Amino acid sequence: MTSALVYGGNVSPPADLPFEDIEAPNLGLVRVRAMMFAERMQFRARVAALRREKADEDAATYAAIPELLEVSVVDATGSPIYSKTHWNQYGATQEATVLELFSSAMRLSGLSSEDAKKN
Image (cartoon, one colour):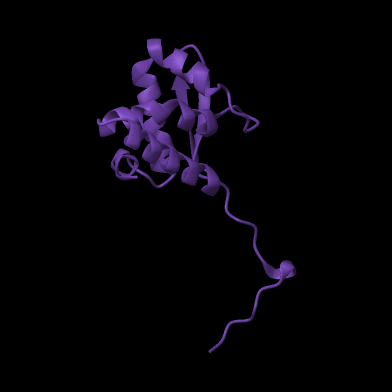
């Protein structure tokens, strides 16, 4: 049995990215979404580059957290709410929240902190 070759008129659009809303102190309710393909590949490459620079695998992962949050934590319109610099600053006083947002973004993207350490 053979399948019909797809053409523009019969291709379904890709599924929406999974997301969840999380209450963040001093921010309110924010949306954490999965990374898109290119974002996930860039994140993996960034962690790998940081691992080459740092002997501590955890330090390499932690250094990339603000970059991940920059693309994964968005407002109601889907726009990033903070730059990586602002996430780094926010994390100075809201460490537990930043780690919760990071964990959510990794899980929604089909990754774990162990995956980040391996790359």
